[in-house]
Length: 180
Image 1 (cartoon, rainbow, N blue to C red):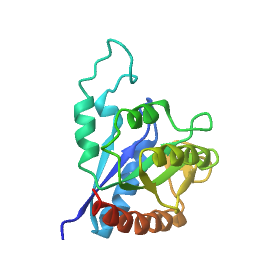
Image 2 (image 1 turned 60 degrees about the horizontal axis):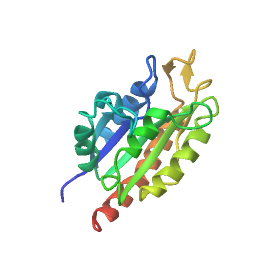
Image 3 (image 1 turned 90 degrees about the horizontal axis):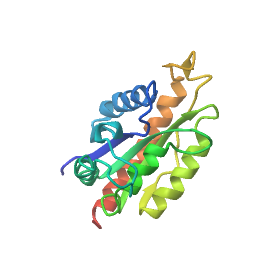
Image 4 (image 1 turned 180 degrees about the vertical axis):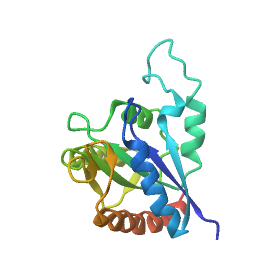
């Protein structure tokens, strides 16, 4: 059987963002499992203008569509900004429709309260896009899982939580692949 493709989507494009650290950490843990092909997908690489904005350069949209379409499931790295997800993640989600449908996703969030409010908002959006999000949700605190709020130093329990989340993402992604 061919391995699943699971995209780890970095949900921020801001300068000084922490999502690359978190995404790389999740990928390192995931790659040790050997149960799927894990790829980091950075929405900043696609330079998507605001959806529907006149005169915007939409040249990155085709590449974004292709990157998402070839995934069987996702892990979203979601930062909490103002009690929600980033505008860039919302915009990137809205750019596509069918590319998301009938796939599974896990969420790894971070923020002052572990990014919990962003994760809850993201769950509602994913439901509308026909993405089945899993229950286990690693939530990293800027105060306890990052040194000086800048360098990821996740507690060991967080790695366990990532693996438990992937234990759910993989079978759900496998099952949903049968209906695509």
